Image (cartoon, rainbow over all chains, first blue to last red; front, side):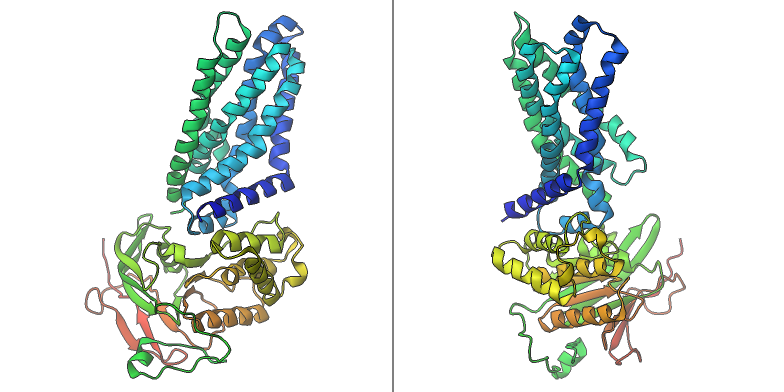
Length: 224
Length: 270
C-alpha cells in the first residue's frame, strides 16, 4: 500500500517535468552550450580534446544536472503540495525518493544519452562512447539522490541555487573520480575497468539509501 | 439545513439534535481531539501558551483571534509540522498507528494544486495518493462527483494554471471530497471564494460533521455555518485574571449561546 502513493507521485512528477519541459530543456541546452564552447576556448588541438573529453563531458554533466536540482522540492513547497505529501501517510523518505527518482529519469538519463553526441564535438575516442554512456547511466543516480539532500537543505534559502552548488558539488567528487577512472580503465592497456566501475555502482546504490533519509530529515526541519 | 452540533453540553443533556436524513452517519468510533497544556514557540515568541481544549466528532471548532494570535500555528502543530514546546495532542478513537496529521486534511494558505495538471488530474492525484487502497474506478467516480459539486466539471480538462483564484481554491478544497479523513484542519478556507462558494463549503463541512467528522477552522470571516463552538486565541500578554493553567468556559452570546473556550490569559513576563 505504501508503494502505490510512491508510483503515483513518481508519475505526477514525470508528467509535470515532461509537460512543462523547462527543466529538461535547460539542462540539455546548458550541456550542449558548455561542451560546444570548450573547443573554442581550448583551440583545435584534436589530441588534447580527445584526451580530456571524458573528464569535460562528466564535469559539464554534473553542472547541467545541478541546474534543475534546486526545483526538486521548491515548486511543491511553494504551492503547498509538500505539506500535504508529508501528512499523506507515506513516509517522507519515500516522498523524497520518488522525487529524486523522477529527477534522475527526466534529467540524469537524458543528459547521459546526450553525452555521446556531444563527444563528437570533443573528438572523443570512438571506443569510449559505450563505456562513457554506461558509466554515466550508472553514476547519475548519485547526482539526483545526493542532490536531493542539498535541494531539501536549501529549500527556504534565498538564492539557494548557489548554496546548493557549494554543498553538493563536493559530494559528487567520488562519483566523478570513479566515473573517469572506469573510462580510462576500459581504454588504456594495463588498467582495469571493473574495480572503478563497481565502486561507482556502490556510490550510486549508497546514495539511493542515504539521500532520501537525509533529505527527509532536512524536509522535516524545513516544514517547521 | 440543520447543523449537527453535538457539543458536550448537548450530549450531557442527552438531547442529540436530529441529523439531516439524507446522509448516513459514518460508522466507526467517536473521535475526540484533545490538546493538553499546549505551548508552541515560533522564533523567540511563545505563540500558544498553555492551551487546552477538546473537540468531539460532529463538531466544528472555530479558531478566532486577531492576526498573529496563533491560529495557523495551532493548526500546523496539530497537523504535526511544528514541534511542541510542551503539552500534547491526541485523537482519541482514531487510528493509533497513524499520526494525527495522517488522519487529517490540512487546507493551508496554499492550494496544493499543480498548475501544469488539469483540474481532474490534480484531484485524481490526491485521490490516489491519499486514498490508498480504494478501487481505481471508485476513485475516479469520486473525483468527477467532486468536480461536479465544486462547479468545476466544465473545466476538468483545463490546466489549473488557467483557473481563476477562486476556482483554484475550490479545486484545492476538492481534496476534502476525494479522500476520507476524519479530521479537517482548515486555515482560512474561504479566501478568494465568492458567497456561493462559501455556502458550498459550508454545506460540505456540514456533511462531514454529520458523517461523524471533526473540523477545526481558523477564520476571521464567518464560515457561513449557522453556529459553531469558538476557541478564541488571545495573543494578549496581559496580567493573569484567572487561576493558572485553566480554561475559562463561559456562556457567551456568540451566535447560539454554545460554550466558548477561552485561552487562559496569563501573563508570562520574561
